[in-house]
Image (cartoon, rainbow, N blue to C red):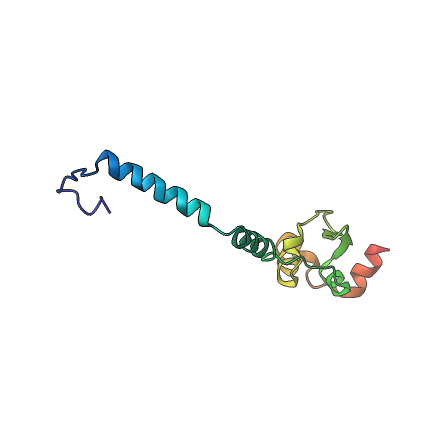
Length: 113
């Protein structure tokens, strides 16, 4: 707020008693907080990320399962679990391996074996 009030100087009008009162109010606010509220907010933050599981249809993009993460069969790159969405796997295939983007599922099945 001070950046909008550039021409006006602020005058401090607090007394020592006011400072002690504000410290007491802050201490009360800290004591009043409910520990259950903190637990619910931290658990909801953890549940926001979606852990995807490998689906057999991902082999049509050239990926196999490797301990819960997708592994590209063409470049042997291990992608994070967050990249296991079909659109992201397709994007990897089209950008990194443009020659293989038109290959069918049987090609990748033979390459896997």
